[in-house]
Length: 240
Image 1 (spheres, rainbow, N blue to C red):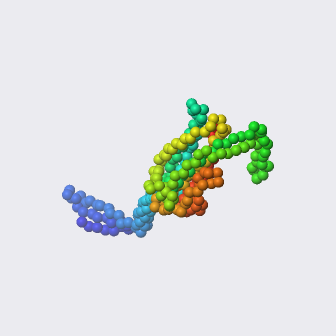
Image 2 (cartoon, one colour):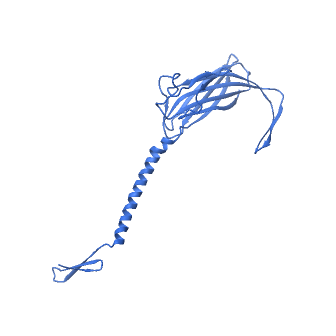
Image 3 (cartoon, rainbow, N blue to C red):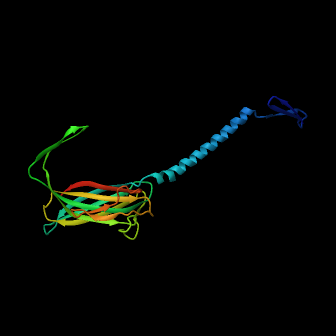
């Protein structure tokens, strides 16, 4: 076999079995082709690293940075009892809409009976900065605490139940509360609730349970507590 170079081409020739000369051409990559191959390999490596980062970010880094989030829907209804009293039932469904397990630190449910006066009253807020109110309706004359419930768990140090209450992603919590009131004693039921949650199962906060002047339960020490998320003073009114 004989070989000769022609530029970047290597040409090898040899005699075939039939005695006819055969030639085979081998390419010798130029520097441009060499660096093009290196660039392609580098691009593939970078793409693979980026895909791995995106996967880790979506599965671990991003969820770790997200705050726990819970979505709740409440309903209050009532019915007359044979004795003439009225049974009030409050129930809710809460769902962990985040991507991480959350832990209930504490919850409070308080229900008030509200009465309205018989004579409409006109009041309002002058329009300013895009906000204004005009109201000619029956004024609220009284608000009486009817029911208050509190439950705390290990994240609230010193006032908690023995076991943690964890809620998996997309899982739901269902609770019902009921009590009786005199017939036609109130016009509406006003529901106030507080829910404190966290994504840290082993962290505790020095939160204490207090009683407000009207007798309802409350939490003291939640303001500014890092890692603790509290949904508080959420008001809903339901006719009685």
